[in-house]
Length: 454
Image (cartoon, rainbow, N blue to C red):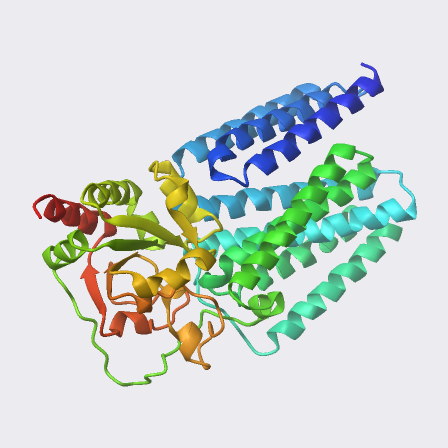
């Protein structure tokens, strides 16, 4: 097949991938965006298989089929609560693939010094992304401790690993061999995993976004080495979007990226009350139902507890019931609610909750003072007043949803433990806050039954 046709197919594939990414930025069109991005990827694969002189086509088709089957089954079976782990793992696979491509071309490829340098960087960055993403998966799945793991001179040790990785990259450019390349990949693999250890669970979404950006960068460098425009363009887009998302999330937490990566937030600390005994006031579901039924306005704040209980459909039922009683219901969405950006938006869209009812932090914060009832469902750190009032808190300065300003706050919570960042939440002890302990889905079901009788 003519190279002009293949390059044209690559161009169209990139167009579809960019179109898909654009459509994914809006919840209404996100599903179609996934479809068009998939079409673009399929075109890129077919164009590659049609490349003149390509060998082992049957083997590649078999591997693609096996990988596609694993991805399909995984995507069908994984729950929304485990989606961040899946994103981390699949992103790591991309980084690992970029590192393997770099390994093989440094060992067997005939390139000039500039392209070798790009391939070496792709190997370093791809290996860091692979090991770091696997480490993030292990922490999110709680197969290893999801709190920060630190030791003396940790950052200095990581710095030495980075220097050693770059030094080995320079060495293999001049003396490529299986042994030297194995050491070359082992060092950044260790570095990637070590980068994850001091990161607490609350910062894990930001770290996943960092590794996503690194994977895109590694793929783009591979594209230069292979003279593959699709890899160059798509890798650059992924790297740029991952970087922008990382910076946006860090801004939403009012913290620098350096503080996220090296600050070890997530260590369990006490609130500003110290050892003073505090009491969470429990209220019955019946009382909460009556208060909501006679409210003018209810703001619902969803969090990971809603996702863990798969309670989004019960939330929709509650919203419809309150609407039927003339209660104005809206949802307040914090940028880092859940365990990944857009987590709450996707869950609520899955339950057919109108997108117009979802309000971001800038839109909703001024309304809390004029709100009769706020219902917090499994959210913790994003409503913690310590972010505004306690300078000693690790989350001090992070913009929060100002639920504490409402007349009544009901919090659905499974237990009395701390949130993902391991920090005591002063909201739970406030005079206008009442706890509804239990699984979110079960509590909402009882709340709906009571509302029907009110």
